[in-house]
Image 1 (tube, rainbow, N blue to C red):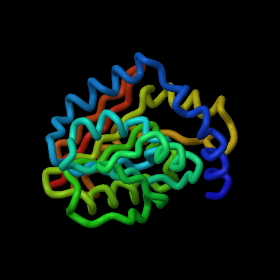
Image 2: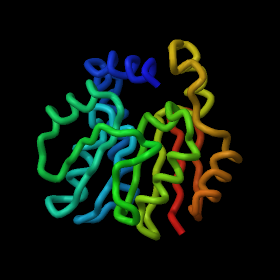
Image 3: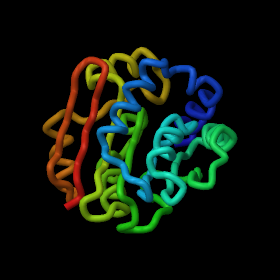
Image 4: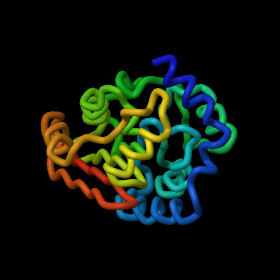
Length: 198
């Protein structure tokens, strides 16, 4: 885990630059489709530098809350500097043992992070635990499963073998962790998996 932490800490200054204006437009479109309401509590798992924070905080409004969790100290430091808003909290923590209340959140999201979680089933279980019934867990990568696999293989280091599960496996993981209405989109430029907590 230390090598992973060092790896992501080293990318903190460059992370935001990896996302183009077009990427941010796609994210804005996706966030719009999630039907986030004012007052919602949203958990951002593997939040990094807070790429999603501004989009999310505008949706939940002053009465809502966005809680980001990440294990990269450097990325969190940048997130806190960039988004000093009262409706955003960035927490240094492990997504496998979330320091968050059970049955408390309306939505959980993982953007550009899920492929990097070593124990993905545990993360989905934790997402299920913190969500209210009817809440959704949304996993987003701006590449297909195959594109992610190639990209991480070329990147090397601790992320060489990082990827998202196959369609069949992802459906199984969601269902095993008390999610229903599982939808998976996997095509060039987008991997999106959504499950609703039963």
